[in-house]
Length: 286
Image: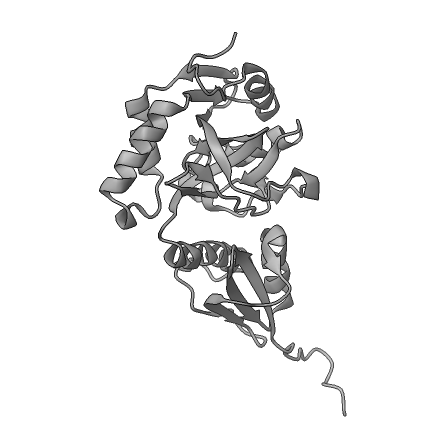
C-alpha cells in the first residue's frame, strides 16, 4: 500500500471507550486520539473495559477538519479541543442523570473519613476541587469534585470519581470567562484514595474562596443549608417536593458550616482538625 504524500494526515480508525456508573455505561466513539486521551484521563477511574448496558452514545470525528460532535447535550463555544472535552464531560453527566433520576444529583464535591462523607456543594470557583484534593492528601478518600449523586432513602453519597482538577487560583471573584477557561490541572489520585461504595453523609461544608482570606468555619443554619443545596441540585424537577423534604431532613440531622479560605492546604488542615462530622452534636469542636 502506497503511503500518503508528505504533510497529508490520514484519519485514524474510530475507537470506543466506555464510561461506567454502576451498571450503566456511556459510549464515546472518536477518530481523534487527543479527544479519547482527554476523556480517558478525565474519567480515568470510571473507564470500563467493555459495555454491558449502554445508556447513551457520543461521537466525535475530525478527519483533518474541525471537530464534529454528535449526541452532545452541551452547547459548544469555540470548537477547540478544550471546549470539546468540556462538553463531553458534562454530556456524560447529563446522560447518567437521565438514566438514574431516582438519585438526587448535586453540583458538589465529596470526600469521606471513616464511615461518613463530607459534601462540598458550590458553584464553579468556590474551591471544591482544591479542598477535595488537599483533604485526600491528608488521608481522606475521594468521591468526587464535581457531581455527587445522593440516595435519598439512605442519605448516602455515591462515588462519581472524575479525576480531580483544580485551578491554581480558584475564586468566585474571578471573571466568568476566566472560570470557564481550560486552566485546571488534573490531580491523579492513588487507587487507595478512591472511595468505592456509597457513604452516609455526615456533614455539609459550603466553601467560599477569597484571595488572602484566613481559613475560618462558621455555622450555617439548616434553612440556609437547604436553600444552598436546592440551588445546586441538578435534577430537582425529578423530585420536587420530595427533594425539599429530604434536604430539610438532611440539614436537620447533620452539621452544616460555611468555610471561607484563601489557602487550600490550611483549609484542609482546619477541616481535618475541627471534626465537623459528628452524629449527635452540631457544634464545631474547638
